[in-house]
Image (cartoon, rainbow, N blue to C red; front, side, top):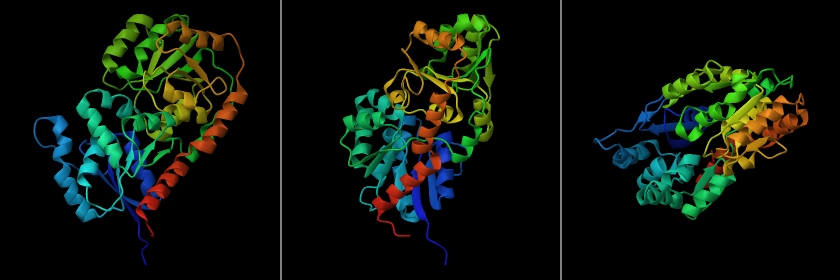
Length: 357
């Protein structure tokens, strides 16, 4: 007899790498996910029809289609990602159904979108209020969500890194000369990559360090022009890579750096800690759950001198900070193994659904 599989209706951006990872993980753990999305993407999904010329209305106008799919698919749980969009329409479409609603929230979803207008705030609050459980990747985001609406239940699960990639953890902690730095945040305004180049231009010009940035994001062309004018060819770029190749590439650097103005618990930060890089990040609330003086280096947001001081200290010493790196690896093993945290989320959803498969 074929074993019954737990059916999860996921509503999320099919173009998001996180969505692709999540759907793949559900399948590997014997679930039957069905992804609905308004956005195109490489992961297999059912496309929700975009109706009308006003993009913001596409979500609400997709509700009748979602209701039809609910009747056919009969999910054990409905699992939207991003409360203000998919969470809102999932809550509308699932009214009167027994399938529980489990909503994943993200950094910008809670920190930025609700403040765009009163409508955005009401939509986000409606999704949160109607969810049987809300899942976030940090306590900070969960607490901010609770400020928008009372939550029935809230849980924190960092995205983390797959167990197999722990084998890429550095075997040699010696710092490179020049220092090898990676900034794995796309060329978008929120990630503040221009600030990094401005702040570290003196060290780059002296060839004391080299920084590698992504070659993708909406600001890529203007960023490249700015970098060339300021520091010539001392900055390098990488294209999108398959996950194993990217993590191997990342592990070849000494330092992880992020200047993001808004963050939860960045998956890239946890990956860097697992791989043995020294983590450096702007001091914003979501990051502090993973970075402290014992685990990495925080600098004052948008303060060029503060960031330069961190790297000047690296360049004045050969101290590899072995203890810090080993401690970071052990914490990732305890709290942020991707497969374990997905398994815990599946267990939570099955409990809410009263599932006996």
